[in-house]
Structure formats: C-alpha cells, structure tokens
Length: 210
Image 1: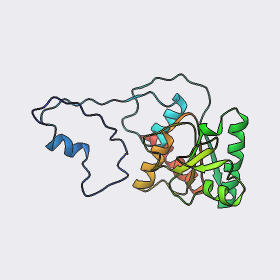
Image 2 (image 1 turned 120 degrees about the vertical axis):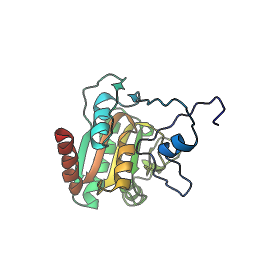
Image 3 (image 1 turned 135 degrees about the horizontal axis):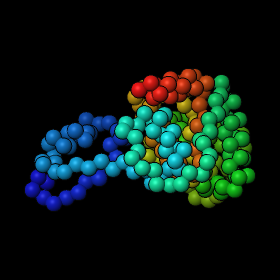
C-alpha cells in the first residue's frame, strides 16, 4: 500500500461499536498503513435536515461540528417523548406510529431503532396486536420495521423513532445514541426514560459553556 495509488474513505466518528482484537483505529492506520498519504476530513452533512443535524452535533457530542449542512430547513424540530415505565414507553410508540401514518408517511418509511432487542416495538408486536403493523428488519410488505441501532448502522430512513434509551452516559450508549440520531432523512423522535432528560440537559449545558 505504501507504494500504491489508492483512496480510502471511512466514517471514524463514534462508529467503532463492534470492537475486536483486530480493530484498527484511524490513528493506527495513519501510523502504520498510509505512509505519507494526504488526509482530508469530509464534514459536509448531506443526509439530515438542518434541525436534526444540529441535534446530532449537540446531543451526539460531535467535534468538530459539520462545516456545511446541504439540505434546506423544514422548520420542524426533532421531538422527545419521556416515559416513566415500559407501559408508558409502549403507549408513546403506539401514538407515534399512528401520528406518522396519519401525517402521510407509509409504514415502509418508518423505522423504530433501539439499543436492545428487548424493545418497545417487539413488545407491541407480540402483546398488543401490532403484528400487522410492525415487523423485524429486514422484512417485506407494508409494515413499520424495527431493529437494533447496531443492525441499522450505515442505513437511513425518512422517519426514525429511537426508543428504549435509559442511559446515554457510558461510551457505548453515547456512541449508539449518536448513530441512531443521524439515521433520519425527514423526521426524528426520541423516546427515552425521564432519567435521560437530565443527561440531555447536562450535555446541552456543557455545550453552552464550552
């Protein structure tokens, strides 16, 4: 590789969620693989609407932030739903599915993402008669798909509903939160426990003072 002509592209921002003994960091690659190659940072956001991108920057603790956001502003902020119990979380998800479908989105446009397989969408599908509405990703047919954030890494959807977050302070949880926030192309809603509200407030406050 040191004597070859090549280009390598990668997203090294908070993406290492499948760490193994053989994982290579960007620093490792620069030190041992790339010789005297030129390095350029790509920091133009072409996926998210501006208000979603700003939430990704702030709540995902992105540093440095995006240089440019290409898409026009639709004037709609991402929304947050806080719950105190699993039952309340399931109720919020049920309401959101109806809301987005009423708003004109097809079920195929909507993806429910969770950091865990034991998620609100799985409970609704099994216990609440939503088998005709919800289906595990990947699936065919006109149904809302759900899966873990890990399984949806690198993909996107018009409507993303993040569920089942009870903590975003650990490194692994924070990385998953960042990845989940950045999957949406049109609408984003975060369903989280009330404990996460305090954590979100602390992140935003630290951004203001930094």
